[in-house]
Amino acid sequence: MISAFFIFNQKGEVLISRLYRTDFKRSIADVFRIQVISNSDVRSPIITLGSTSFFHVRVNNLYVVAVTKNNANAALVFEFCYRFINIAKAYFGKIDEEAVKNNFVLIYELIDEINDFGYPQNSEIDTLKSYITTETVVSSATAAEESSRITSQATGATSWRRGDVKYKKNEAFVDVVETVNLTMSAKGTVLRAEVDGHIQMRAYLSGTPECKFGLNDKLVIDKGGDRGGGDAVELDDCRFHQCVRLDEFDASRTISFIPPDGEFELMRYRSTSNVKLPLRIIPTVNEIGTSQVQYTITVKANFNNKLSANNVVLRIPTPLNTTTVDCKVVAGKAKLPRVQGGSECTFMGSANLTSTTTRQVWARPPIDVDFQVLMFTASGLIVRFLKVFEKGNYQSV
Image 1 (cartoon, helix red, strand yellow):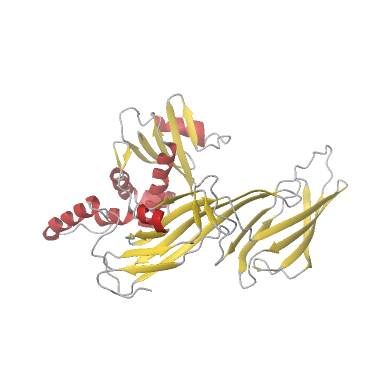
Image 2 (cartoon, one colour):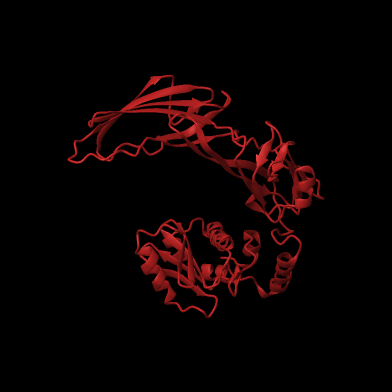
C-alpha cells in the first residue's frame, strides 16, 4: 500500500516526511522534487518512475504526496490524501505552509493515527478529535474513563460519533450542492452535459439521534437501459457516508443514519441524463480582417423567475494579440453578477488587435461561465423531508 507520505512547499522543500515501510529511503523525496516540482511540463497527478508511483495533490502551493511501490488502488490513495486535507482543515482551519510549520507535531500524530504500516485507518474527524487534541493533557484521574470511552467509540457500531454530545439548541441543515459541466457547440447543440453533486449536512444534535430523509419518489440509480421516464431523476452512480443504512435506501429511497457531529458529506452522486440547463449561452463571433473581433453573446436564464443566478462571471476568450476590449449591453436588463430567472440579455463587445508579422489561425476556445443558483438543482434531485428521532424526544430545527 502506501510506503511513504510527504508534504512539499512550492520550492520543493520537505515540510513533512513519514516512511511507513522499509522499501524507501528519505532520499526518494529528491526524486519527486526533480521530476515533478522542478518540471513545469508535468500535469498528471500520478507519476510512475520504474516501479515507484508518486500520487500528489496540489493545495495552496503545497504538494501532498503519497509514494508506493505496489500496484495500489489509485482511488484509495487519492481518497487518503483528500481525507488528510479535510482533517487538517478541521484541526487548524486551513492548510498552507505556515499552518503546516506551526502544527507539524500535530500533523505527525494525525498521519500516524490514520495510517498503519501503509494501510489507511479510521479517518473520522469526530473520532480523531476525541483522542488527538491540541488542548492540555487530561489529568490522571479521568484518563482511565476517557480511554475506555475512546476505545468504545473507535471499535463500536457508531465509531463516527460520540454518545455524550450535548447542545442547548438542536439543529440540522441539509444542502444539495451541484456542479454542471457542459460542452456546447457554436450552433447551440449540447455535446455533453453532466452534473456532479453532493449532499452536505451540518448536524448539531444532542445524544445519538437517528435521522431520516427522503429523496424523489421517481429515482433511478445505475439501471443501465432501464430508464425511469421523462420526469424521473436518473443518477449514474452514488456514494454514501459510512453512517448510512444502505438496505433501507434500496427499499424505499429513504436515507436513514446516525450522523457524525458537525459538518460532513452525506452523499455524492453523478448524473448525465435529463439535465436541466440553468443558463444557455448563444455566441456569435465575427473576425473583421486582422484588426478586430466582434462578439454578440446572448444569455438566457432557463429557471423560474422567482430565482436568480448570483456571482455570474462570463470569461470570453480573445486572440493573443488583443490590445483593448469594449463591452456593452444592447438588449435586456443585465446587472451582473446577478441574472434573474426567465430573463434574456444580449452583450456586444469588440476586441481590437495589434498587427503581427505572421498571422496565426485563432482556435476560438470555449466561453466559460461561472454562476450560483440557490434552490435549483440541474439533476432534479430534491430532499422531500427530514426527520430526527432521539430517545430524549427533543425538538430540532
